Length: 389
Image (cartoon, rainbow, N blue to C red; front, top):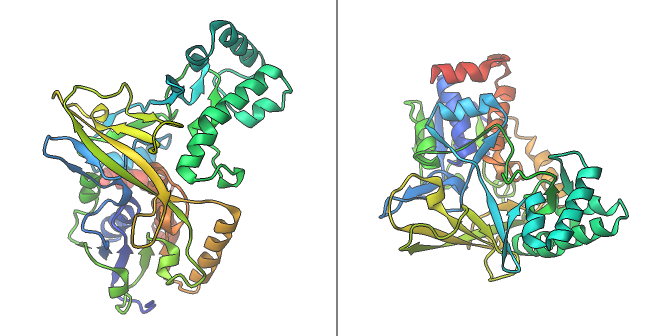
């Protein structure tokens, strides 16, 4: 890995994180950037395309941008128009459609009215309205009804979905925050509660292309990092998996992978929500319907079935880091080793071994830029970015 300072910076990975770093270096510092990706398309896991029927399809599932950070929201909106969209999620539980997260309305969909009324009454007496209570936290109250509800959520939602997503249901997978693990003490059926929510009208690939429109940026697809290591770069920003950067010196970091099976259907809509989870039925975990996110007046729709499996090098894509204490320790070993290369920086979901949302990935990249180039920082530096784009 080169440490000789030249006038060109290298960004490895043309996903959202890499695009933000490249854009900042090119526009804010007026420095040259080469951004590479070994795939034949940019965008990483948010890569999308227009199909023959005019549908905007994501290669790896649907992605809603959601954040409370106005600066991050303004930043991404400076590169493309966003359509407001509130994500709603459902699950098929024993043939009954229920909200996810489980909420007060779910009680009446799943249970007889007398039981639902009793559960709602007790929940509202014990917990503040609109809070999110995890199943295990219901049990500490030593109440038979709460124990019943906790067991129901765990056995019919949390456990089977964890087995599909992770092939495991252990507590050390850091699943906190996932909507199928808690009940919301309200009738709010939104998945996300952040102030700013939406999807880019022309897609994430178009958004990233706009970020990279600068004479200082050279994009090289179908290019492996190993072909670039002998060259001299001023700084290297690596958004790939950190173990790959060091040729798996300490072993391979485990990931789960995800794949999608697409189907065209000649009906107006296939399902009532953008995503329907299937905890028990079928071997897939969910069905996505892309028409919900777009304004298309056609009597057709496109769905994809979501399958989860372990990541196997050379066979599929890294999707989700498996955040067990053992795996986090292995990542930290790589991170410590990487500190010997003073001008190489790791970021993004793979470089950081974290399961970022899109907003978190953008914030992570902007924060790293701020840290590396601290002489360029100020409290309102992102506002200046937006105004200058």
